[in-house]
Length: 173
Image (tube, one colour):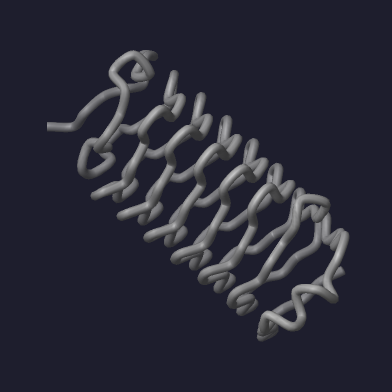
């Protein structure tokens, strides 16, 4: 299915009516899904959320493998525990978002704005943060082995030096 230029607003009463959502391989482009709640059984794997507004969306523990969030606004969204393996957040706004404990292996965050985001305990092995804005982002106990932070600004705060392994860690002067 395909949803384009839609505005879908959920209030707290609607949360109890939405269960086991399966939107895999759908296109949901330029949609506004404010305060959207996705639960543990829900799946958005392979979906195209490019350019969508997902501010303050609750995507905790959601299966979003290979989903495309290119240029999406995820300001204040909660992606904690989400399965984001090979997802794309290129140019996305993740300001103040939380992705604590997320599995974001091989995920692209190139040119993303992740200022003030919380990435504690997340797995970013082989992730691409090149040219991303990371001011105030919390990477405490995150696994950043072989991640690419080329020209990210500034260098991520609160990182564990033991987790900064791999030849792709180059700080641009």
